[in-house]
Every structure is written in C-alpha cells, then in structure tokens.
Image 1 (tube, one colour):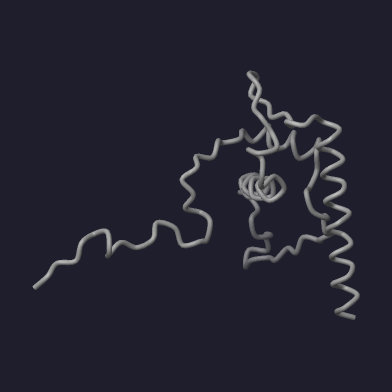
Image 2 (cartoon, one colour):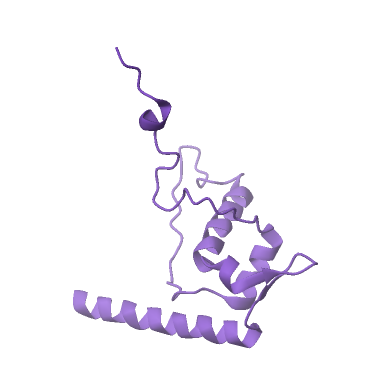
Length: 130
C-alpha cells in the first residue's frame, strides 16, 4: 500500500483567489486609514446607500452595543477597497504616514479621473438596464 505524500495531498492554504500571495502586506494603522480616506477619497464612484436597520426581539437594532467595533471593521474593509495598490502608489515616511510617490496633486487628480471613469461606466450600465 502506497502512502500519499503531503505535497500532493495538501489543501490549498487559501480559498479565495489572490489571497495566497507571498508578498508581505504592511499593516496600516486605523488612524492612518481614516486620514488617507479623508484626504484622497475613493478610487471608484461612491454609491449612495442608505443603511438598512433590522430589529431583533428585544426591540434593539442589530449591532447595538458593539457598533463601534462593527464600524471599525467596516472602515478597514472599505480602506483596502479604496486603496488596492497602496504599496505601489504610496510610501511610508519616518513618522508612519503614507505619502503618494508621485505627489499629492497627482494622486488627487488620478483618483478624480478614476471616479469619473467609473461613474460613466455605471451610468452606461444603468442606461442599458432600463
């Protein structure tokens, strides 16, 4: 009876595509995430969404009591969607702040251009749907 080797029998370490990168990602402090999001904004067109609140049996909204933690995790997810190429477009200073490699004005104009392009794409999709 042959015993299978571990190299052929191993499950993939990550289930999602692209999460197994060997490149080490630097951890960005929460305060720096908020600063970058406020200064540079989204890469794609921001959609207006209203928060849906559902109530449980006690009459409290779900998430009450732990709302700060939920919001913090939500902002972290949003940050990595808004800055998918952080390592390529920004560098970290001695003080721990991230600054754009090509300068502030260039980064602001790049993001504005990308948002406009995204908005046009969304508008075309909506027009086709109607």
